[in-house]
Length: 589
Image (cartoon, rainbow, N blue to C red):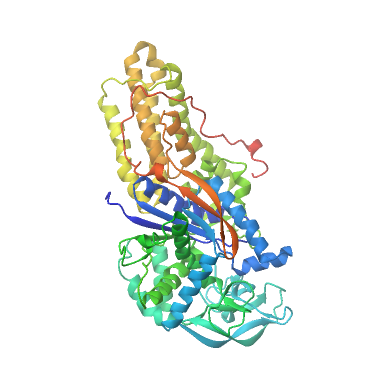
C-alpha cells in the first residue's frame, strides 16, 4: 500500500437524538468508521472523523410530546447518553457535536442562501397531508403507511426502510398520523421551499457512472436504479413545524423551518468547521473540504442502508448545487460504505418502535471489545444478519477468548513467570519460526489492504486465522515442556510467539483497541498505543453543548512490524477477556 500521507474525512451518520442507541445502529454505522479511522491513523494518514446528534428530526418532537418535555430537554438527555456510549465503546471522534449549535445553524443557512441564489431552491405551494384531529400539517416522519413501491406496511412519509425508495408522503397508501393514529387525513395546500433535484439528475448520473469501482455493489446498484428508473424531482426542504432552523428569507414565518433531511447532512461540513475552530486553526477544515486547497482528499460516509439515497443522491446533489457558484467549491464523496441491517427476533431494530438492545445498557455488562469483535465478525456488509445472544456468547468464548485471548494469556503468563519478567533472548530461528513470522509480518500488507477497502469482516477473519497459526506453533513447540531439557529452544519459541503477539496486537488494534492497548502495556512498552477520548462543553450564541473529542497523536505511524526488544521488561499480564456463562448472562439468553 502507498505510504503517501492523505487527508481522509470519515463522516459518520448523524443519529436521531430520541433514545438510547441500539446495537444494530452500532454494527451498521458507528463501529465500522471507528475501525477504519483507527487503521488509517495507525497507517499515518491525516484523519478527521466527525458526526453528531441529529436534534431536529421529527422523532425528537415525537419523543418530547410523549414524555411531556420540550425538545431541548430530549436533546440534552439523549445526546449525553450517546456520548457516554461512544466513550464506553471507544469511538474516536475528532468531533462529535450536534445540530442545534450556532455554528451548524450558520452553515446550514449559508448553504440554503447559496442554493437559493444559484437557482437550486424555489418556492411553490404543494398539497400536504393534514390531520384535523391534531389540527396540524404532518411532516414526513409524522406519517406512516404502505410503501407505493414494495408494499411494506410501515413505510415512513419520505422513505421506505424496507426497499430504500424515496417518495412524497402523498404517495403512501393507507396513510395514518403518528400523532393521533387518524387514518382520515385531509390534503391541504401549503407553501414551501423546494430543492430542485430534477435539475441535478443528469449531473448525478454522470458522477455515479465514473470511478466508482470501489463502491459496494448494493450501494452503486441502488443509486443508479434510483437515478435511472425514478427520475428526481423537486423535494420540499421546509416544513410547517416549530422545531428546526429558521429559514433565512425575509417575511417567512417562524412556523416554517428548514427540514431535517436537508440540514442533517450539512452536519458533516459544519462539524469539520466547528472542529477547526476548537483547534484554534479556523481554516483547517479546508484541508479535507476545499476542492482548490486539496482536491485529492478522500471523503468517506459510513451509514446504514436506509441512508443510502441521502448520501449518494441528495448530499452529492446539494454539494453540486453549492459548487455551481463562487469558490470555495467542496469535495464530493469518495466512498459510501453502507451496511445492510443487523436484525433481531426476525425483524429490524428500531428505536421508535421499541425493538432495541440498548448499547449503553449492554456496555455496562459486557466488555466493549467483546461487542467490537462480535459485531465485526457478523457485520452485515453485504446482506442482513440476524443477531442472537447464543451466537454472541459462542463467538466471545469460542473465537475471541479461545483463540486470541488464550494465546496472549498463556504466552505472556509463561514468559513473565519463567523468564524473570523479561522478554527472553532467542537463539537462531529455524525455518518454521522464520516462516511463521514472515506470515504474520505480511499481515500488515494483506490485512491492511482489507481495512483500507473497508472489508472489515474479512480483515477480522484473517487476523483470527493468523492468531490461530501462532497457537498451532506453540502447541507444536511446547516450550513449557522443553524449558528444562532444551532451555535455549524453549526461549526461542517463547520469543517467536511474543514477537508474533506484538505484531498481532497491532493487526487487531482497529477492532480490539482496549485489549490491544493492554497487550502493548504487558509487553513493556511505555508509550500508549492510542490517544485519549475526552469531552468538552462548548458555549455559543445558542447556549452550551457537550462535544466528544479525541487526541490520536500516539497511534500515528504504528502500522509496521518492528522487532521486539529482547530483554525488555514485561508487566504482569491479566486475562484479556471474560468468559461468558449462561448463568451470568443476566436473562439475555
